Image 1: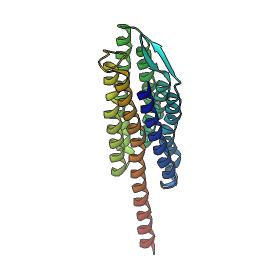
Image 2 (image 1 turned 30 degrees about the horizontal axis):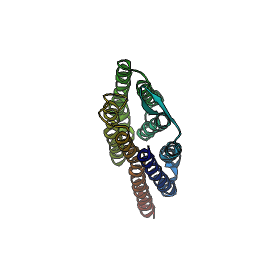
Image 3 (image 1 turned 90 degrees about the horizontal axis):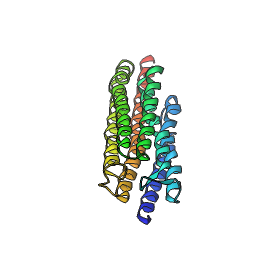
Image 4 (image 1 turned 180 degrees about the horizontal axis):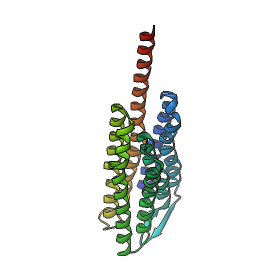
Length: 236
């Protein structure tokens, strides 16, 4: 357990540092994007609380002979919908598709948790339902939401949408592999190793997602200022 606590502590430090950087970034992005930008700060900010509690030994239950970190699933239930909500807002998606996207992502986490605390073979059935729901998330991100982005965004903004979408999707696809190989599934990966992998993924997905968006939004702000200056010069 000492090793797991170490991983949780490192995860806490990573989320703290990432949140601090993103909070400072709030002052650097264009004012018209700051309301949406708050989502990027909230994602690792929520994780700070989760990792602090897990590092202190809270939030774990014993189920089917292994530890299930309830706090971790609560973290994901709150943060992963914020990731896809940011993508939908960035793309200018309609309300219906945005709601579907957020709900499907939340249900993916719910069924993953249900599978983790349920005995086999029902656990695998619940996991499969969660996987199918995540398929719906992918369908929207690469379908309707992407179409909205193409119709509303500039080339630079479309590039940002695609980069963030692909970044988070590729990393999120590792989580179900860890679930299957870990204690809830085949048991081929011990709890300590699974925790290390998940902590790494959490920090990279939460903080990395925000940093990529921050840098791109700063560039967009610079482009906008340059355009305004050129317009002003032309007007003179």
